[in-house]
Every structure is written in structure tokens, then in C-alpha cells.
Length: 117
Image 1 (cartoon, rainbow, N blue to C red):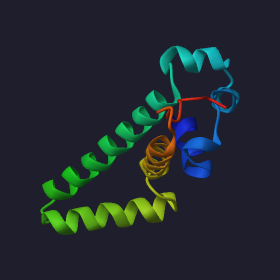
Image 2: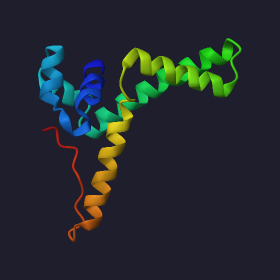
Image 3: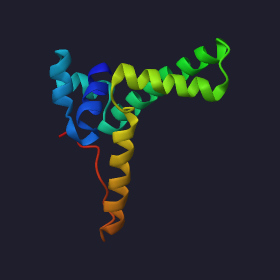
Image 4: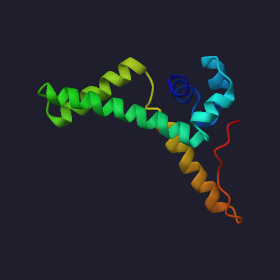
């Protein structure tokens, strides 16, 4: 998951393959496919994990007495300073928007696949 998150942040949803992630962690791409049969499922798991960590940090701020708006601001600020990059879900959201737009213009109704290349 860490390798996938790093790849998504660095190159976007369309800019990585299962083979690259597998090479990053020293396993075969079949091992990655075993846990995440499609690229979309992998990206969704990465986004879900990031969101869970983010919300946990917000809850921590709230428990420390911060008001809700300041808690969100602080967690965003820390995440940006620490990571220096956007949320890993942002590139995936952009990919999905492009897929919907392409699909709407095609007469055969096909859409973007969860391809791993």
C-alpha cells in the first residue's frame, strides 16, 4: 500500500503499473493482483487508507480541544508540510472524470478500464 500510494502521488493514477509496485516491494506482480484484482480496487484502497489516517488525525485534534474548522485546517497543513504533495485520491478522481468524459463521447459506450499498464 505504501508503494502504491507513493506511485499514485508521484505519477498519478494512470502513471503506474502493478509490475512497478511489485518491483518496489520485491514481489511478483501476481502477488499484488492477488490482493487487488484491478487497478481501481488498489487505488480505492489507497484512498480509503489515506482518508482513514486523515480523519484519525482530525479526531486527535478534536480530542485535544480544537474546534472542528481549526482541526481540519491543522491536519491539512501538517499533511501538506509532511508529504509535500496532494492527497493520493486527487489523481484518481481526475482519472475517473476523464474516463466519464471519454465514455460520454464514444458511440459504443465503452469506458476506461482498470488496466495495469
